[in-house]
Structures are given as structure tokens and as C-alpha cells.
Image 1 (cartoon, rainbow, N blue to C red):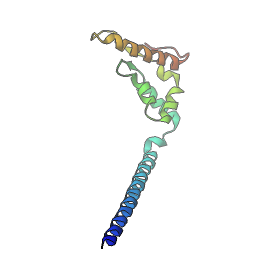
Image 2 (image 1 turned 45 degrees about the vertical axis):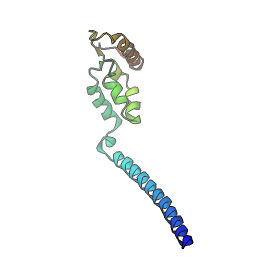
Image 3 (image 1 turned 30 degrees about the vertical axis):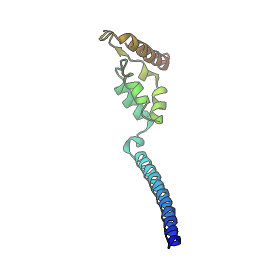
Image 4 (image 1 turned 180 degrees about the horizontal axis):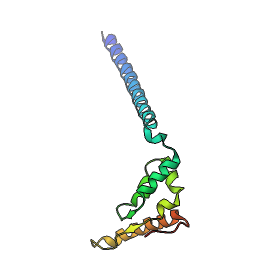
Amino acid sequence: MAEDLDGYESEIHRLQIRIADIQNRRERVKTYTKHLRSLLSPIHKLPNELLTIIFGYVCVENELQDRGGGAALTLSHVCMRWRQLTIACPVLWSAMTMDFVKQHDDDIAADGKLSTIVRLYLDRSKSVPLRL
């Protein structure tokens, strides 16, 4: 009887490991399926030239703040394709709008963040004339 119980326990343990393995595989398939579905979304069918034109309208005014780096920076963080497109298009980085009115005492620290963002925009705008 004890041997039977040990056998059952062993079989239960083996099956639990198998169930965990199957659940893990199922989750990987779900993740992969979700990734494949995202590749089929309409935005991925737009040619790079059209996306760049759209980005140009979005980046007409890049409002730079210590809490946000403007539209060009936001677009460059969406996905690898958008990052490559935005970095390759200096005109997207050439427009900058900033508010220099201090709101809080901790704005000195925020100025450091803002100056980092401005330097990034200056670097990425290359030789394109700036619009401030």
C-alpha cells in the first residue's frame, strides 16, 4: 500500500512538471502570436516616406520640458523602425519650443534634464536650420 502511494505521488509530481512545461509553452505561443498580430497592423504597411511625412506634421513644434522630450523624442522611442526613421530625419529635431518660466524651487535639477534634451535635439538636427 505504501508503495502504491509513493507511486501515485511520483506520478502526480511527474504530471505537475509536465503541466508546468505545457503551460510555459502555451505562454510562449501566445506571446509569439501577439507579436505576429502586431506585425500585421496597418501602421506596418505604411512606407517609410509616408511615415516620415506624418512625423513631420507631429514634430512641427517639439515642446521641450524637463518631464518630456518633445514629439521627436517620443516617436523615436516607439519601436526600432520609428527610431531609425526619426534619427535619419534631422528636420524632425530642428523645431524646439521651451518655456523658461520657473515654476518650482527644484527647477534647477530640471534645467539639467532640459539642457540634456536640447543638446540631443541639436545633435540630431545636424546642419538643418533651427526653428525656436
